[in-house]
Image (cartoon, rainbow, N blue to C red; front, side):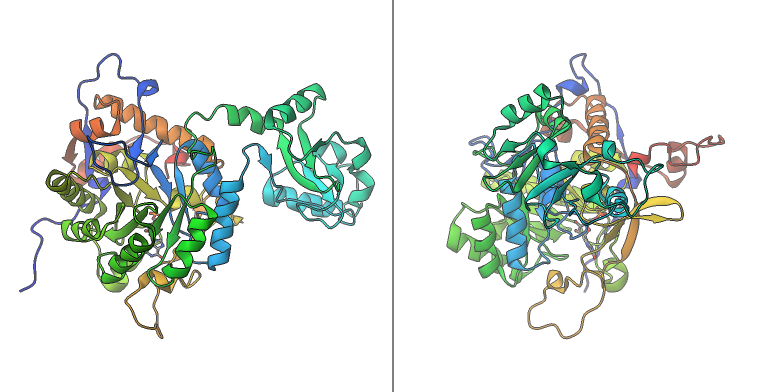
Length: 505
Ligand code: IMP
């Protein structure tokens, strides 16, 4: 006879936190958001890999490329570069993160001298940059011929077909620095010459990078940066349970700090075989997460198979239609609570703490607090990060509002059928995700600052200065459908129809 779970499975929206006592020293500035990323013998050793903030970006082409990875690592989280691309391309993205020198920017909006003011306007709209290098071939590392900034042109006075060569600031008038210049020296030159940007060139006068005055300032103010032992940004990478024998070595050689098997359903022999292969070839030196699961059995299976962390969630993602197409899944709150209990039980039995990640379905910022309170060690988000400047997807105008494109890995657009591995060759497939828009929300840094402040405030309301303390002290209550209405602004006429906290959704 089929097994029935007694209780309905629940979502984050059905829960609230009941505040506990807040001691006077429990203030947001004193909160630490450090959290383990991979398994360790808790109480006996330090976790070998910890996150400085409990947020990672989803293994999705619309979310996690090298640009996102650098931005998120700067704020203390971690990206998992999407695996639905060639092994070479994924490894190259990982390598770009590891080679990234903070403060040295490779321009993505470049001009050639034959281009026109119309091209400048178009690139400005597309990328939002006001400084564009001009190189002989229009590439990011071509021979430097000049620079165009907003000071070089006036749209009201010039015609759009004027050539870049005629209004750029030419090379001979530019202050440049040689490749190998440190960030400190580059910044001194910027200050001494009152510049906004400084091109770095090689011995052949080809452009290597740009250093911006504003970036130096922001670099100094990122105490949470996720850096490895060599002071390089840390990055994760998604893999699948088919081509791991080729993909894993390429990613490891490129410098990936942690891997994760990306699948909608992780309670399978294919995941076990993938983990086994990694252990046989790398021992514990390569860290590998697995998932997704939604119950204790699934967790135990992956923990016993040797997973370094386990991801939770089936069917809760914003772009996900797995529950509709296949009838599998579980409310994300219930799944998180049950898997957290299984993790604690496994720890009591073995002394090994296997961190768990709640993946998908985070809509409001406070859902992050709920997921952590329910026992998650960190959360994975797709839609949240897709809205930012740093995500790889296109920013488009829809009905007068800026949107970013966001599509599921199981959508017809992504065609990432390998994610749904059930062995054998696939001749037929069906969609488990949709293609969509999400409201454009600006920069990752600004949005994460608000999100993390909310999280820290909630933790203080519950009397917690660390995530483990929060998990220990949190008091969660189910809410009735009518009290959910009470929880929002109600019985008033809103002056501003836009969501009152646009960064929450
Ligand atoms: P979100 O943060 O609610 O947008 O959910 C992101 C998560 O949805 C990802 O981390 C994946 O676990 C999951 N996901 C990504 N693409 C698909 C899909 O096409 N179908 C189902 N789930 C997906």
